[in-house]
Length: 124
Length: 240
Image (cartoon, rainbow over all chains, first blue to last red; front, top):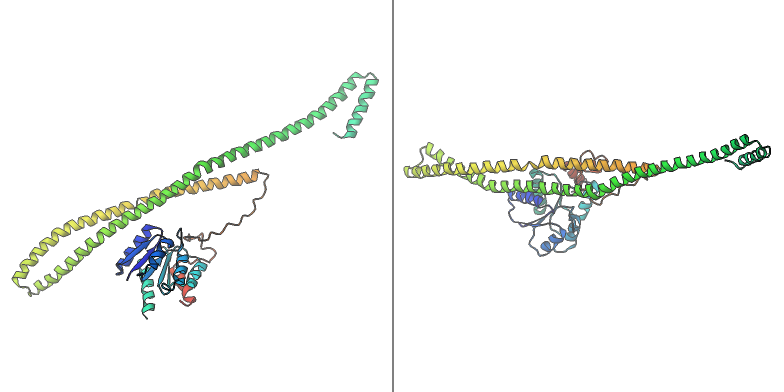
């Protein structure tokens, strides 16, 4: 299981990576915005995408749309971890095909729950 | 001074001069000059007032100019510094945690292994040879624990010290808030000075991405998810 963590703040990437490691996911890669994330995704081998929304260059929502528009990535599970909390934004993300939505600040338990839920649905 | 009034004064003056009444003629001339002076004084008064307002406006102008020139870039730098400090603190904390987690895991594993052996020894299920090797392991574990616990203590201290950013960033942010308030007051004064024209209620331009919702500020309109439960409810209502 290889996970790509996309966030423009390196500290947030570290926190997410540490939490993922705690959950048993040790194989992670990082990108600091959608622009750098997309080539990594296109190169293949990523099983799960965790992305922030508000990033310079290319935002998380645009990254999500690009992922869903790519036939090779259309089924990639995507978890959004973001401070954007407006209802219309959450709805926008849902419509763009997000698999889970966690708002910052979040707890380790929340992240765990959302990730497990996503994999349950995939496996089930 | 109306034309009729001036004409009347002029006629009176001619009459007085023709009659050779110099006192009356002087009196009328004074009156005419006086009227002119009055008007002049009024004009000077008005000009003085305008000058005063302009000066006040100018000093406000220069106050705002100095704010834009010095204080605002200064505030930007300060806020940048807040980012730097918080990032440093987060990294320092994360470094310590990442270093200490394996240390504590090793200790935990060792203790688990030894306590299992110890149970067997207490139940008299341990051959003497194994007991000897366990004794050596226990000795090793104690000396290792001492070092590891010291390491953990130091790491915890690092984490403790890293929290010092809160004090400093709090102060910086407070200063920036003060500056913004000062700027706001100056802008309002300037607007009221420039003819008291009511500032058009400029509709705050909605940012494309509102960013973190500040409790008590951004959640008033009810269109913001206050917590993860709100998000989950919304998503499940959408069939998630």
